[in-house]
View 1: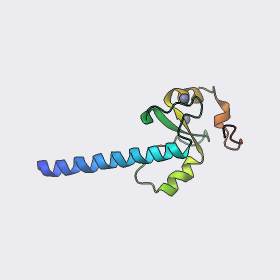
View 2: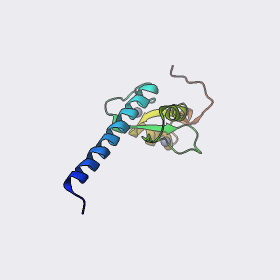
View 3: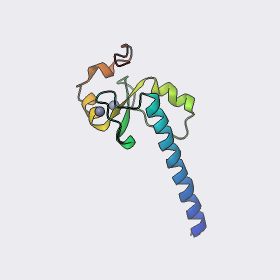
View 4: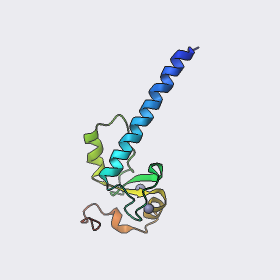
Length: 107
Ligand SMILES: [Zn+2]
Ligand SMILES: [Zn+2]
């Protein structure tokens, strides 16, 4: 049996990790322009995904184990899109977001 204090401490640590991940996600989102690349949505961070532009790579999920440098390296190959547009990207509606080499037409 874990004591209440131990469990409490574990909760606090988990909670802090979750907060750090959220902060990192916010930073990452700002880094990628602070809005959905397709529709401009920016109301709710948890509805934002980081879509990897190389279809052979998995989409990017922020981990608190990564350094910011590692995160930025991955972010450079990703676009921030909202959940709805992300589904559309994977359905093939936004082929321009699936090209790594294409000059960014949005900036
Ligand atoms: Zn969108
Ligand atoms: Zn994706």
